[in-house]
Each structure stands twice: as C-alpha cells, then as structure tokens.
Amino acid sequence: MEPNHAISIMNDVSEAVHLLEGSSRIREFLRQVLRFQPVPLHSVARSTSLPVPVASALRRELEKRKLLSRKGGIVLTEHGLNLLESIGVRETQIPRLQSGYPFPDWLNPVVEKLDILLSSRPGPNFSLDQSHAETATIAMRAAYLYEHDGIEGKDVLFLGDDDLTSLATIIFAKEFGLQLGSVVVLDVDKRILEFVEETCGSIGCDIQTHYLDLKHGIPEQLKNSFDVFVTDPPYTVTGLSLFVGRGIEALKRGVGGQCFLSYGSKNPSDSVKIYASIASMGLAIQEVVPEFNRYVGAQIYAGVSNMIRCVTSEGASALIPEDLSTLYTASRKQC
Image 1 (cartoon, rainbow, N blue to C red):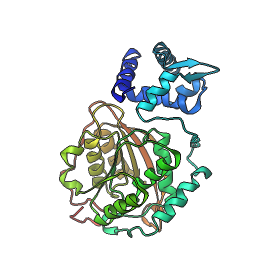
Image 2: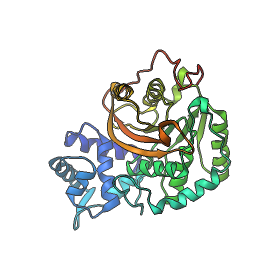
Image 3: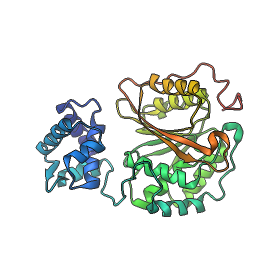
Image 4: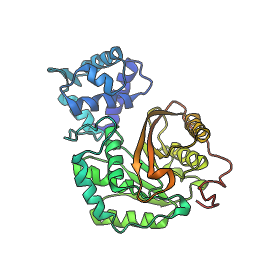
C-alpha cells in the first residue's frame, strides 16, 4: 500500500465518524491496537482520549474496511498491518512508559551509547541560554516522542539542539528498529551543527543541518514540511514565543501537528504570558510533565524543566514577537 492511499483511507474513516483531527487520530487508534493487541475497546479509548461511544463507532468503521477484527479484543488484520507499515509504523517490543515517566531500565542501552557518543560534545554557551540536559533525559525525550507517536515515519525538526536530542532520537530509533522520516536540525551555534554532522557520519545516519538565526525566519523549503518539532528554547517569554512560532511555521498545515517543548517553571506573571502565547498560536496543550528534564550543573530553574506536549488546532499560525531584544536571559542582541 502506498502512503498516500493509507492516509486517504484514514481520512475517510475520520470523516465517517466526524473526527476533527483527521487521519492523525485514526493513526493513533490503530497504533495503540498494534502495540497492545488484543486490546479491549475501553483501553484504546482511554489511551487515545476518545469517548467510548466514539471509539466504538471508530472500531466499526475500521472493521467495515477490514482493518480490524476481534479475537479476545481488538486486533489488526493483515490489511491493517499493511496500512500502518506503509506509513512507517511497525510492531515493536517497546514497553509503555509508566505514569509519571520514571526512567525505565530498558532504556539503559540507549543511555550507554549516548554517553560514549557525546563525551566530546561542545561545552554550553551560556550567552545562548545553553545548558546540557543529562543523557538520561535526552534518552527519555526520545522515548517520550515514541510514546506519543512522534517518531515512526515522522518528519522531525529540532529547533536548537545543544542538548543533542536529535542524536538521542536517532540512536533510540536504531536501537528499536524504528523507521524515522526526515530529521532536520536548525541552530545558531556552528559547533553544535558540526558535532551533529560528524557524529551522524560516524554512525551512518542521515540528517540535515542548517545554520540559522531564527530571528530572520526559516527557509521557505522548510515551511509546511514537518509532522513534529522539538525545542528547548531560551528561558524568556520572547525566546519561547519565537522558537514556538518558527516551529509552527515549519509544521504541515492542519490539525494534529506535534510540539514537544521543554521549559522551566516561571513566576505566575510569566507563566500566564507563556501559556497565553502558546494558546494564541493555536497550540492545544495535551500534557505538562513537571521536572521531566534534568540538566548538568544548571542553576537556572534548579537544574530541571518541564515537558510540555502540544498539538496544532485548525488554523494554527505563528505570532512572532516584534521586539526580539530580550531573546536570552543575558538580553543579548544576537541569536
């Protein structure tokens, strides 16, 4: 089956049950069945945040198209397996992350590989609000992306990557046999880009890097091109708004584009501004995981920050701040 045909089928199913999210929600439903089949309807409804009557209607539509059947629970047919494989989703043995996201032992091999690969990474440039996340953290970011369908067959953009989460995602995908789409890194620090390129060359993976000042926009060829963006932006309201805005410009149009945003807790006044900025651009917050990220020797935010997972709503659009003079905590004029 061709990917476009698979997406067309999922769009038809979405329209039949009147889902606003389109093919992305159908993909999520089928993927949950694949991971845990045979699975009760109530379990799939809970894991996909669908009301049980809607999940039941969705199951019926998928059964009509011979994508699902029932054998002690919901299971995929061969046709359903072929559809998912055509869009990069295959059966794996990766366990579900536990509630609260404690670090799982099965992720240790990824951390060990990262410890070796990143031992000579460039030091942080504090004027750019850089602060290295621990290798366990970036491995968990990759696992979190997988848990929430941010890897398989997805085109992923990393907006700033001094934590080298792009490399963690690639190593995670290699470790568990996952098929990534394209991986692109944008950064204003040439040292980071050179390190990413050299490391990818040594492990035989494909990645694109672009030296870029986000204040001046992103290249036209990168707009409307990605399923997911990942960012750990500068620790200012302006910085967050700029990075998230550029991420939205890069996402494919429509509902369900994903944002994985790492950001620390702020005072109440700044917190209101941060979440208002996110909402004003049409991003719907799905989850905030407190203290998900831990940083090496970082003093700001006591060395921790939150994971904020968002999806685009219909008509999501970037709102770039006019005044970018306070982009970084040091109030530097360059990005």
